[in-house]
Length: 89
Image (cartoon, rainbow, N blue to C red):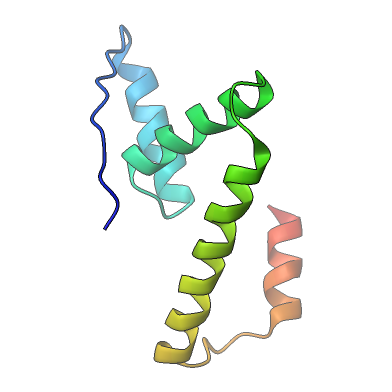
């Protein structure tokens, strides 16, 4: 298990907090994961973090997703339909 470090985030606007919660929910993410990803994206764009680190995380994530798909089986919708739905959004 990876050791996690805590980071406090204080917002002046309650509306921003609500927007973050909605955006995270739309992506099926926790608010913590959503904010961590946003911060990581910013660090990469600012040149403070290597994109190689992100690639390692993506590979681990995809591996976990493949394992989950094996466990739950087909989801009842074709890949082409999922792609088309994603393009509409």
